[in-house]
Length: 340
Ligand code: NAD
Ligand code: DAU
Image (cartoon, rainbow, N blue to C red; front, side, top):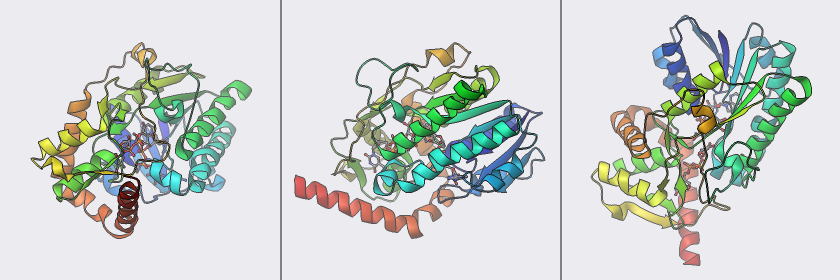
């Protein structure tokens, strides 16, 4: 099987590539990645000399780059996206480009090359807040921030290729993943690395919000099962079904690192902050998938990885990102002071 993995230098994509090469001796993977601030070839050092793996730098919005790598591909797995909700609130345009237009370019090229399977990686954020029973795949969508709306646009477009052209598209909706190699703007690596450096943990609003923090390897094994056994035209939720409030998550990280709870600072809430996500993943479990980690173990496994790999995250927290983060942090702190 020859896979085109897009966005493979990011968090989930790189974990997926490493896992897939390990599990499938006879596969070949081409990784097409633009290397935005979130893409990092360090994540793939361990496989860069593997003859079954090839990296190509390119943008999924650029038809030529995509057409160059598409011939001979059996399965496309599209991870490439702008992914950080706060950035989408500040500057949505890049999200619309990559998360919608980029999907269009990939679909056109894949269809022209008669690709056998197209897996569009989407997110539980497209459902919007789930305050009651866990949502199944047929629940209505209610995306509430520009990132979620762009991802919903991308998956609607992908599904339209199945419905209109009978093109074999599968959509997956993953829960909030945690683990090695996640860019330290996302909450678990941000809180962990801030705590290690005795810096404040900026908790949005009350901190009562809940997420289904799922280990990235569980997300990746779910995708592996879907690639093998999923039905074209179908949507699959990938969630471990565990939940934790953000305030509990912050305290768990501090306890593990033996740091004081006083490091938690309540700052201005995220605009339109979705309170809770909850998905029912029975459909995927029916294909034989089972998550291995509960939320607590997933978070602790991630925390230990960041403790053991300062050489990976320290450079990412300096320079351009540091400026962006410190400005945002000060603004949220000021706004919280002004409103409280
Ligand atoms: P990430 O931000 O860590 O990585 C994104 C990768 O895509 C980077 O390597 C980046 O360089 C690349 N990229 C961005 N724009 C590109 C473009 N135009 N062309 C080619 N490459 C481009 O993201 P992640 O957290 O690993 O998420 C991967 C996918 O999974 C995304 O589609 C995201 O929406 C989805 N998802 C993420 C989560 C999560 O918790 N992180 C949960 C569910 C679904
Ligand atoms: O649920 C899947 C989604 O999970 C993915 O589609 C997104 O790509 C991914 O970024 C993630 O989105 P979230 O918004 O849930 O993740 P984030 O790490 O940004 O925030 C998690 C929770 O923590 C959320 O309730 C907001 C809160 N938070 C976040 C940051 C960055 C804080 O309290 N403080 C922070 O500094």
